[in-house]
Each structure stands twice: as structure tokens, then as C-alpha cells.
Length: 441
Image (cartoon, rainbow, N blue to C red; front, side, top):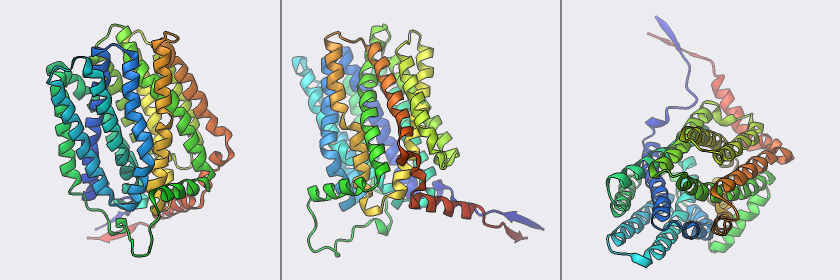
């Protein structure tokens, strides 16, 4: 009796125990992150009702992320990424635990300042997590597995947009605000225990014996910027990310909870809309993984961004919850179908010793104008120049138009001609075309 078997080009990722630990640890951290953002935003809106306080709190979180993200990228290239992730998750747990304990006391007029300090500290330690998390994956899985691994990591991240809001809504309904933040702190502590068991490949260890004098942090940051400038498509991606995320962060993160409040809905409606966004990103992640990261079809990405902008625009006309849920679902799907291919592309074409700095540049670009966006939206809302719905309308139009403008750049249209990207694609095709092996029984 004989049967044929075709070798799989990508062994099942779940058999990789290190990837599984990374995935679970990241999932728990992301769930706590998602719950914290929803709980903090609604807590501010519910207790103060002030657009200015909400905007200032979000600025306090995004400014330290902007300031320290590049330093975090250098640290990710210089030190053990596992312990950077561990320290960041642990510190976030401590910050939320302290905030929860503080809320047990009568805060009174100190409430906004406590929220500002918590957001600032949270954003500071969070800045070191993302470059390490984004650049560690190539050392946990093979480069042939980067596309499906990134899809799974993105799915884990976006599960937080489902489970996080649901968890926050459940905790706020069943318990008090202090208990809500204390439970989130406990989740971060559990995440640290899992990440502490992660073992990176030997190639991940930094060899300092080849250097007699190590460049300063600022010098290494500058080297990362100079390297990125040598690849025009990277600069196009960074620039688009900078502006698109500015038009997304303020209008959506501020406009959505305020619009929900204006419509007379409660925290459950807000968490449901955020959950729908998360469900969409999970669906988008599955689609992207099934389509091999849209390799060979990168010209579709600008149109995905256009649909994303259309979804945000449509939310501004929301008067019934089902319509808003469907539009947020569309936003989530197209967001994942854009983010995953671009992250996989960068991880493929950037050398390992530069990956932390380049990924930190991408993250910095994605939040770079966030503080400006929050400040501008706070001003427009506080002075009644724009309503929350109009803010979403403007943001959606800007995201759609700016995203679709990618198609105008020749270097982006030719992005998949990069030698390392083309070489990796050819290698995968050769593996898929290997002759079948006959097994005799």
C-alpha cells in the first residue's frame, strides 16, 4: 500500500513552544491594554464629562510613547528583547495597581491629575514594549513563517479589541472602577510570568565582542534613521503612517466615546463598538493569513485604506447601534488587511541588527502626531467648533484620501520588486513546488 505526502512549507506554528509562549503572553498583555484604554476613556467621560480632560489624558499617554519609542528601538537591538518585554508588562501592572488603590481613596479635585500621571507612566513603559515585541518575532520563527506568524500575532492583538472592551464593560458593570483597574493589573502580572519562560534563539543574543566602543543611544537612533532613508519605500510607508494615524487617533479615540455619550447610550454601547472593531481585525487577520499577506497584490493596500476611511466616515452618521457596529467591523477588517502585509514586508527586507530601530521608527510614525491630533481635537470640541460626529466625518475623509494616495508613489508601486522580498517569495514558491514524496507501508 502506498500513499503520497506533500511536505508542508510552513510547519504548524502551534508546535513551536516558544512562539506559543510569546503569543499567549502577548495576548494577555494586549487584553489588559485594550481593557485599560476603554475603561480609562469611559471613566474620564463619565466622571468629568470634559472633552479637555479626555484629550489631555490621551496626550499624556501618547507624548512619552513618542519621546521614548526610538530609545526603545535601540534598546531592542542592544539588549535582550525578552527582558524588555517582561519589564514593560510588569511596570504597567504596577502603574495600574497603584491607580486602582488610589481610586479607593476620595480623590475629589485630584482626579484629573491622577489620571494624567497614570497615563504618562503607562505610555512611558509601553514605549519600550512595542519595538521589542515587533522585532522579536523573526528570532522565534523562521522567516518563511513570518506572514502566518504575523497574522496570528495580529489576531492576538486584535482579540484585545474584542475581549478588552467586553472585559472592561463587564468589570465596570459588576464592580467599581478601582476593582476594574486592579483586575487589569493582575492580568499584567500573569503576562510577566509567561514571558519570563520565553527562550530566544541563540542568534538573538547580542555579540558585543566585535565592538571596542559601542555607539551612544543617540548615535544608534541616527544610524537607524539613516538606514531607513536609504530605502525610499520605507520612508513612504512611515510618512503615510504618520499622517493617517494622526487623522485616525484623535477623531476615533475621542470622537467615538463622546458621540456615544451624546446619543444617550451607555458604556456597553461604547464597548460594543470597540468590540466590533476588534472582531473586524480578527477577520481581517484571518483573511490576510489565508491570502499569504497579499504577497504579489500590494496595490490593493491603498484601496483597503480607502475603505477604512469610508467606514470611519459612515460612523459619523450613526443613529442606531447595528449600523455603527457594521461600520466599525469594516474599519477593523481593512485595518488588519493593511497593517499585517506592511509589517511582514518590513521584517523581511530589514537586516536583523537594524530591525528594532526600524520597527520603532514605524511605531513612532504611527503615534508621532498623536499628541497634536488630541490637542487639536480637544480644542475643536471644547470650543464647540466641531461636534463629535463631524470630527469622525473629517477624520474618515482624510484617512481614506491619504491612504489611497499611496498608489501615486512609484516606489510603493514597485515595493515588491525589492530583492530580499522577491527572493523570499521565490524560495516559498520552490518549496511549494517540491515533488511529492511516496511513502510505502
